[in-house]
Image 1 (tube, rainbow, N blue to C red):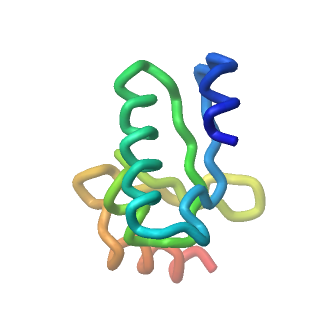
Image 2: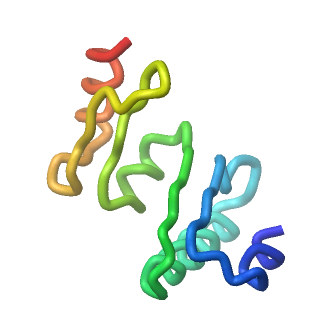
Length: 91
């Protein structure tokens, strides 16, 4: 499915839980693919319920509540602990 998107030449890519239900090796391949897309100039938005994936892969983080940005973390502040603090503060 991802291959079809790549052939379409999209410049903005949305990945919604792209690693759910796949093995560790396949996850690594998806992360490499996403990293390459960013290096090639694509904008990538990933939705993930796995905090470790967010911390490992992304430059920054935005917490949304009721269709609005309720908080954000820069790359320097991005950690699982800070993600949980932000989520608990805005619940």
